[in-house]
Image (tube, rainbow, N blue to C red; front, top):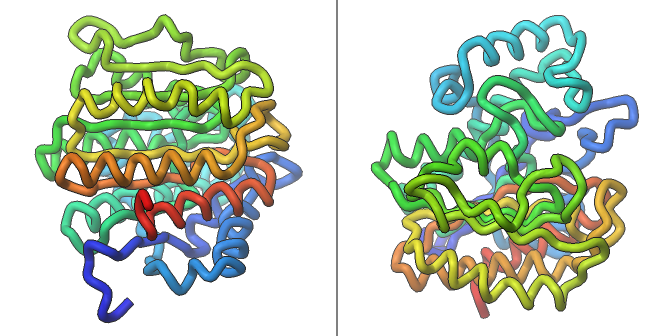
Length: 320
């Protein structure tokens, strides 16, 4: 990337350490997901347009910014034995799960720090955006909540207060939403399919106490497509801009694309690119340009490749 100014560089985190975050024996969140994205990225020539960075391991102290010590210790112990589940059955332990999950968090933190340092314009971490994990337990394939750690770290390390979190994964980002439900400075916009796991994110949930009207859930009906999504995106983008966020996080789960085995939405990968492009434009209009995209869910290899590459294309080329 020599000769390209930092404000044009997009970092993409690729490496076996985050690829190992995945479950075996036919589990939908398998260890194939990073490579499915990167194969398509290379086919499109994106590997020559981005800066590839290596995964980074989060420290225990960083994990404790969101998670309880008791839970971190539990994951460490079950990572040695590889036995049992880390929740009620969706998220099995396996040997090395602690290190894999800590690399997801550390890589998201590294991407955030490089954006804040101005060494890149934007960043994408494909295996990240684990939005279901709660402070004291895993949930829905998510061991550690990298988003929660990011939000606390932006505040502790940089004094960033106004943060926007945008989630277009088919499943409601409950682990993030309820952790910051009463925080008026965290503006959450969450598109998700209604009536599927985790069964939360009703349109009537707008935030609590001083945070009322700083959260916007937009449940999408069965088989909702691009036209339906875009009808509501204008409302969502106005809602985001009103909060004047100093940093924007996008969770771009590919399970909202038609053909995913765990969801029934009919979006195309073009929506992922359009959302990312709109957020690039918003970040630039706000004067800081800070946008970090995280892969999230998605269990169809073709959709993972096309959806996430559409996001990276938007990060590279901007709003057009």
